[in-house]
Length: 437
Ligand code: AMP
Ligand code: GLY
Image 1 (cartoon, helix red, strand yellow):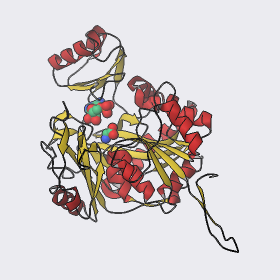
Image 2 (cartoon, rainbow, N blue to C red; image 1 turned 90 degrees about the horizontal axis):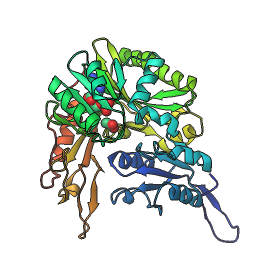
Image 3 (tube, rainbow, N blue to C red; image 1 turned 90 degrees about the vertical axis):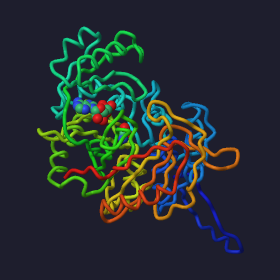
Image 4 (cartoon, rainbow, N blue to C red; image 1 turned 180 degrees about the vertical axis):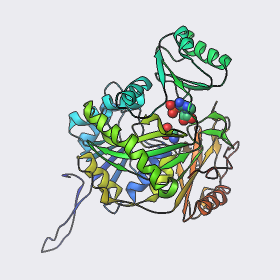
């Protein structure tokens, strides 16, 4: 840390107190990044924080950066002598240039994998091939190019169809009937709604979903506090999939034997597989699992933390997240720097009118100053001309509370979130009620 050097002192003895301040840039602009930055700000090492592109709420705890695009961001980091770049979301990691690849070339430590390894998230087919090659439990699948091939690959219903390319979160369909499969295949492989790309036809699994997070540093790993997110827009897990309408997290969410099983059957072979395939990895790895009657299986990998799981998990960390990530990004996984707290954390998302099909912006948010004892992270807000926060996207706010029990954390979240509102706000009433263990 040769930068961020501040010196204080005066007088005859010229007593200088040298303060080495770590400078961290986080990429992203949503609730996950707000929660990450808040946890970094709480780190006893007191880093200086920056965010790109960021949001008005984020800029209350992190500074703006003067960058237009990814290459200029790298230039800005070099000029500013940034000590650590933390990838909040995946989009920059998976670009042609790759955030981590560019950071490496520039000599900037990065927490987040290079684009080659980030294919685990960017390409469904790449992930399936990796899973099969390393004998990691997952749903059976075929990869196809055309509608006819897809129809031939469908052996039973329901079936899961996954477009292997960018589809703004709309590339996966769980089809209960042949007609549903037909119309999705038409849209994606005939009309090419999302452009060119292959399709993964996947066996439909059943069971509760679980999000397991690890820090991966080369051949080492550290399993973090697990979470469950609530993906459907309506109560009772009904309605279309969203980015996530809430989350519950706790060390006690998953029984110890189940976590040991997940570690043996999924985490260890994944880390060994990355090594074997020559895929470098330093960053968070998010395992999207389904707990099937045949044991845990991988539905997807993401090369970042989950959103809204991050908002629930971060407040459950003591220790020094900034120092933990700084060491890990340099290849030294010091698990003792992060102290998982016991207890439960519940996150409730307040979404805007029309979400997830559409979303409305510009609705004024009221009640933000009246909440107490909870954290509010901003997913999609901005300040209006009067200086008040208004909606600016689908998911708007994440209200998060911790308590010794799941019920107490849940009660606290709902009590406080009831004070916050905006026209057309949507929120589920059953976050953290559905439970498994
Ligand atoms: P993905 O984008 O792969 O995470 O899929 C989005 C959602 O579709 C998942 O969170 C699951 O709810 C569902 N899903 C994906 N794959 C399967 C599967 N093989 N069986 C059942 N549901 C699935
Ligand atoms: N919680 C779902 C995701 O982050 O992809």
